[in-house]
Length: 449
Ligand code: HEM
Image (tube, rainbow, N blue to C red):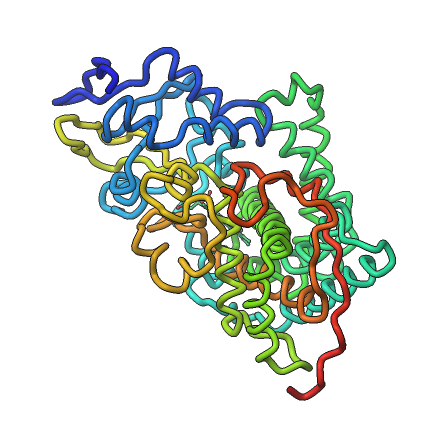
């Protein structure tokens, strides 16, 4: 085991990453490309860090900030769920968390009341219900967009990420802002450019057009929120809150970003199912037990829901979760002062081969037989008081969209990406944008079953 380096914090010594490791860990958080960051984390499995530094938390250095990284499932569980010791934090700006490492990459506006915003998120997104109270109109829209996407697939011969993403973004705009926003591609394009401009290395890649993109995005988003239809999430927010413009804009932008994460997860779930006929057969069994003329309810497809959770575990769309200690905390011999920033890197635990026998396999059953919950930090939506308030909505959207695509069609990988063969450990990165999926029509179901 590697020598413990001697930073003293409060009463005891907290381990500090060596200079070489600090550079590699910093690279794994700040590398300009998502894929590179994911690969670097893959290389830095928790088991390796624990072997080098022992199990306690580790102080790492990023430019302008020195967060503490937790290395064991128990510590990660504690940081996520012990709300008397740790609170969710969104510390952006000088010395804060880099924007691209925030859950949905949208920082809070200055002066925002975080507790009030959280309350509104939970209320409007119906965070504590598996089925949103406005699920009916949402389900209809999901069904419509799935049907239109199938028409595109029939014309093109297969499903590409480009066609899927265009259809999914239409759906997300309808759900968040209302039907009038359905075709506003400029809004989503400007949002994409804004997020890209705030990623590390944007200047290296010559994407310094952030300010222009931000102006377009904010102008269009403001107009949509002002006329948002009552059934949309933005319409509900307007009814619930009298908050100022900046607060509402950032909150709705975060929801749009959250829906983006759900869209990627849905596509990856489809790819996994196309690669695993045995898992697909179980989805098909589940779907065939439902009434053919009606969309499934989000709770009537638990196996498909578990498949989506697996895709989110295997390739986390939100890999880093942050907390701030609200009191002094003890870690064995070491003490950490109140106000420290703690970092939980979800894939370190969700794909930890040392603790999870299913780490690199597609095992939806772990979400149905209690294993994922017992393992404590297999938590693609986070946990505790910061847990993603959009989880139920995301899972409803993913399952119903996939149900719409799969009820009458058999997915088949037109070109199998490397590493998806049954029996092989799944890769740390899935370049979903490069995967094409054929959707072959199944014989028509018998109506009334
Ligand atoms: C597969 C899809 C999604 C995944 C994997 C995901 C994951 C996460 C994670 C890990 C967090 C941080 C949790 C924590 O601190 O413990 C988070 C926060 C959050 N998510 Fe999601 N999310 C998804 C979709 C959504 C959707 C659809 C929405 C809204 C409609 C949403 C809204 C939020 C909000 C408002 C926060 C709090 C952010 C903050 O306080 O800064 N998410 N999400």
